[in-house]
Length: 465
Image 1: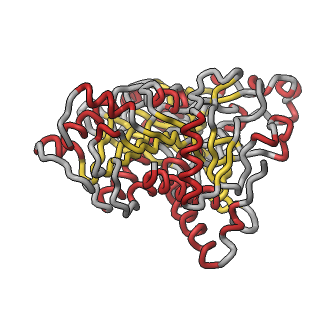
Image 2: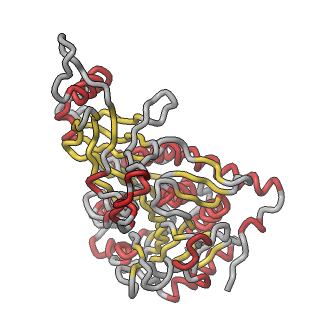
Image 3: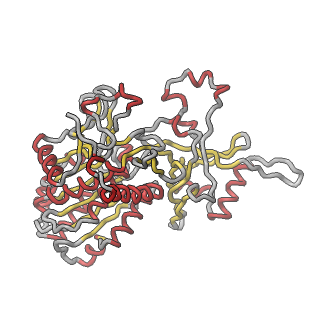
């Protein structure tokens, strides 16, 4: 069953401008927020301007929260939960939009800086699923934080300003690549070869002789002079290597956006905007949950597997009603969730990897995946037929363009989301998101109309679920 192209809904210039304007705001966000910490800082600033208060302040005061009040909670600078309190008791559950804000990349190792053959390099460990050969010979930037022993947190962002230098990973020239070209794609570039070049000027003694490791020493001197950074400070740093430069309009008609990190910031941004722009008087409490570590299994203190969400839910319940452990369990069970994560868009250049009748297509609206997983639905949530029917009805009420999909052909591969973890609480959950071309590449592609339909779909879910 073929779904209509969503652009058919926006034939007037006035309507098309709404799509383009929202796409432009998102493009700017994607250009500047390339790490989890940057995303959280951006979202908190916007949330506070929209009237959201820090939940910690409400907990400290002990003041009960009333219907319509807006609060947020941050977990270690890399995870964020936002709530609009509804008129119903929390025991009836919440409507949750859950997305992740981490993306595939390379992370600096704890002892990263070294010199080889008069070139200074930074050693990395890639994060998430990447085709390693895609990350060579492109301009790269360094984003993150460096924390000194004193506790001082120093933001790092080098490679984005037009006056900044950029960095990169070299590749073997084609003239000498006979052996390399015979390797399988997974081995063309090895993980240990993803070493970022950062300098090449050596230092010399008074006799003009080159000093040992003088290029590395010169880089350390530059870091000391400009940032007051010692080599040992890298041990307590979280510095991510990401593609440098802004996201760009894509195509003659500017209908698409090319940029790093659509997975999954396209869903995080649209989910967040759906919540903070909500003007409805809500019956059920609405939540936008933006988590870290999805790309490596949702583990750790800031991943979906942590107790952060459960603990914050308990704190919220305690401030809104007659809290008990049993009521909290009932509330968790009664939640309904859109696990907002991207889906693979059908690519005509690689049609053999897809099954056309069950693929997502650019320009056809918000994508629902009843299940994800790999080979036999392994690791999948697999939404119930009853919940799928309810979601269909919600989307159709507000004339949201939507489509359904699987992640490629059976036995071709697969992937996972945070959906199954929310399902572990016995919540109703389905995967939903925006179709992406070149997913997990340094630059991915989405359609602006799909982004806008995602916004409308998430708004409808908050209102009607």
